[in-house]
Length: 327
Figure 1: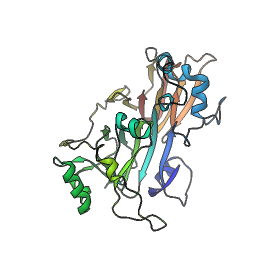
Figure 2: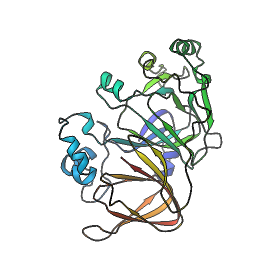
Figure 3: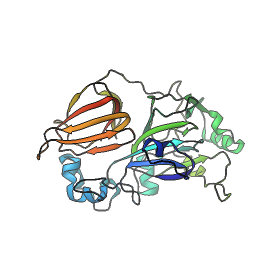
C-alpha cells in the first residue's frame, strides 16, 4: 500500500481493511521492483519474495522459454526480474500529467525497462470519473514547452469519461493522467520510471512543490499521438476468455462469469495472472500433483499462476469478473 497526496479510501474498503487515516493511492499487487517486492500470502512459501521464488523456481513459474532467454542475461540485470507490475489505483484527486519512456530510452538513461501499461476501470469508479489521454491536436516540442509555460497542458489533452469496465492501452510515450474519482487496475512493464510533467501547482504536506521532469520528458513524448477515441473495445460474452489487449509485453483478457468455466493452459509456456475485479470465484487446479488445489479469489485480490498449471476450473460464487494477464 502506498500513501500519496492524491489517494483515497477505496482500496482499503475493497480489501476489507477497515478505515485508515492514510490516503492510499496504490496497492502493488504483484511486483518485483526492488524495495517493493511482493510477498507470498500463504502456503509453503509464505513471506518469501517474488524475487526469491524466481531464483529458486524460475522454470516452474516462468516457463522453459524464459529459462533459455535468461542464459544470456547476467545476474543482477533488470531483465531477469518478473516482467510485469500489477497495481490497483484509487484517485481521490487528479494525478499529475505524466509520460513514460520506451524501453530504449529507459535503458539508456536509467538501466531500466520502459513503461507500457494499460488500465481497466474498476466497479468503484465515481459517476464523474474521467481520464486525460493523448493530444487533442498535433503538438510540437516547442508547442509543448509553451503549454508548460502557460500552465495549460492539461487542457491540451483529450478528456475521457471513464465507466466501470472501460479499458485503455497506453504505450510508452502516450501522455496521460488519471483523474479524480477514477479507480483502475493497472498492468504495466516492471518499471518505476515516471516523468511527471505537470502537477497543477499543488504542494505536498510540507508545503513543497513536487519535482517535475519536464526536460526528461521532451524526448519521451509521442507528439503525433492524436486519436478521436482512446478506448480499447472488447467482446463481453459471458463465460469465455474475451481478449482485449495484445501487446509485446502482455495479453489481457476479460472473463465475466455466471457459470463454471474450465481454462486450459497446456499450450502456455508462461505464468498467468488473474485479477478479480468484481465478485468471488473459486479456482481449482484440477491437475495438481498432490490433488486438487482450491483457492477463493475475491474482488481486489490477485493471484499468480505458475507455468506448471495445465488446467484451471473457475466457479463463480454468484457472478464474478476477472482479468487474465499472460506475459
